[in-house]
Length: 235
Length: 333
Image 1 (cartoon, one colour):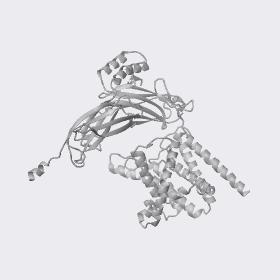
Image 2 (tube, chains in turn blue, orange):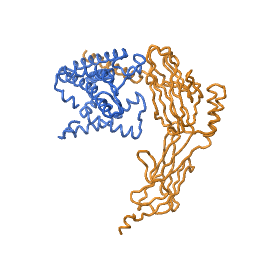
Image 3 (cartoon, chains in turn orange, green):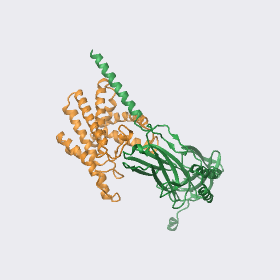
Image 4 (cartoon, rainbow over the protein chains, first blue to last red):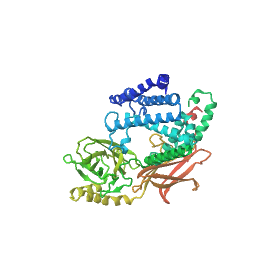
């Protein structure tokens, strides 16, 4: 976010090129050998490129993804002035990203971390997140855009359905910090369903988490809108 | 007309979302969810495809360097210095995937289900190997007795798992091993024989407990600090009980109820605490404590009794003494 604030005023095309370059170069940077016993090289590599015990979220690939988000936000807020256009562009760009990701994966080479068995299998989708592979980043970006376009479409017919996203989206950083803390206490510390269940159980978990988080986010939004504190307003 | 168009769009959208949800819930697993148990007691998650890779796990003390075959196979091993348990994983239908890199993970789990060691094995294209091997050390410094497990993953999907047991090294076990070495029967027969000879030994003792009283328990190591049977009554002081329990015949996630009964100098129970412990580990530790502040306790002889299924499994007497002035203060006066 700090890095992004430095280039937020650049033209969206430049931001897009920077993001694409970083993502394309990142798999090459991952090949830089380093000694994990050496604190300095570990710190440097895991701050920017690789993931490990020192840092799970290296700056470069996630910064590139954030820039993609910034470029899309430019489209949603400034260029595409109707819901229909927003929807079509999001769906189009999302589908394109998914297609590139599939081609990249099927090539079984650059941008892939783990091998997979067949197209559409579990292992096909399950590439590496820590640090994110090029396939993962493109797939994640594409999926996010497709989901956003679905949300835009559904929102036209059922506008109240996504109010919860509106509430939580207004206090995104608060939501992020709180949900980690709640999961940390109830799931990890107490051991409540920690590392248990599959897709259906995860979805149930998301619903329960939203039931807890929506009223909290609503409350915090009130606090935030009345506060003049810079940090609270940032959350 | 516009209303109808809207309705149609809505129906298409709902249909799309339902299909998407169904796809998400069904997943893209290549394995059948319900496992089957093979003759050699390997639990197999069969492939949905008839050409899918299946695995069979065999545990052994050694692996032949020449043939790669298991030597001294079994499911029960004695913990010994410089000894290892090897797992040999035989793969069926390997030839169907000769044109692909196959990624396996062999995961060794302890009695609590925690991963001890995970090994990634990639079989490259045109590699015809149809067996994988992995091993862990079973020296007394590294392992405790209990039920262990090996899980085999293909492309990070669980395809097979098998349990084995580590027991304390005893002379009798060595005899059993010697016998089985000379015996030219099949691997499974040998395994059954080893198990048959060893099992009654475990059944003799249902549960063992050793009770230690101390002032504190280390937050880092969980070990007792200031072990004693005499404690001084003072502000914010406590007596902590650490009970190490060994229950060899434990079920998976078995719920065990223990009672700590703290008895005062008047032979009356002043604090009873039920401790419910769920574990799959045959070796585990439970703790309980009481406060020994001057407001709450009198000097005298106390007893702590730990019961399990109405039987006393551990008992310890201890003394509480009144606080005396520290020597440093005495000398000042």
